[in-house]
Image 1 (cartoon, rainbow, N blue to C red):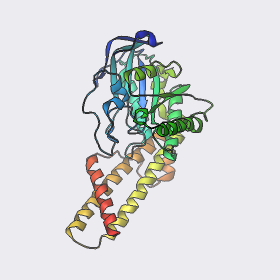
Image 2: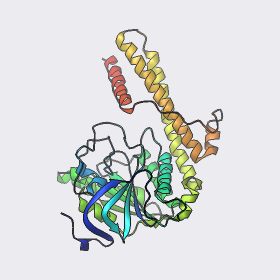
Image 3: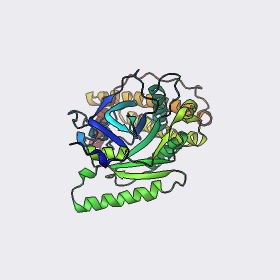
Length: 362
């Protein structure tokens, strides 16, 4: 049942709340209230993640609607959302403004850099408004973080640092961190450990910034909890025409942090290519299994090189100087590759290669 209107400070509920994807060419009100949902794959921000098999009620966007769609999540190891998708939240307004949810690809994806995601968000925000309009929209960033994560690793710390810089390029003075997966905790010990991780999250990551205030909230995978998060009052900022016209990549601090992120991805792929080369050299026979394995290694190598080309393009986009210093022999600007590979097949290949390596140890 829909919660009473008096429970919200800024939200106006007029009937059953539903969520509808906004068609590609449709525009929104110039003073809309836009929520950008971000976070690692499998964090519970939306249904467009294939990282864990998460029931629908664990998804933030779907929790806004009383009727959930039945087949949202799949049991796979890759992020599926590879584009930014905007949703119109029906029968809901904030301060009498249209409410828009912008879903984004998962952070820390092996094939998609955070800088590319930031660029995609900028492009989406630009296309949401009518041509030649002066948008005065209010934008809120919601970053979703599973409380079940045992620790915050170096990659996630870097993602948080990029998120902070990204927010500041849009004149944000604060950001909201939404912790998820609380409903997966059942024993008192699990709950105690999760609360300890929550406090560690606050102290290690977000209270270190003197320039950007952070609000940390709990999401319990209910509609009321989702609406309370949208009703928060201290983490919004006006996007205005200045932010859209100047873009995120012109911010000097953003360029440095984003370039470091992309270089990490490039180094990881280069190491992966070296491992694949060693795997190929280890195949000395010509049995049917070894021939099949060699085809898998060759295909995975092609996909790794494809991802490498994308990350080189990302590096050029955010910091051409870093690109020239690190890759003086590369074409400038690098040519964007054409995608032809299949993500699910690559997952199967990795599993097969892993199985084959394990079998050699026995």
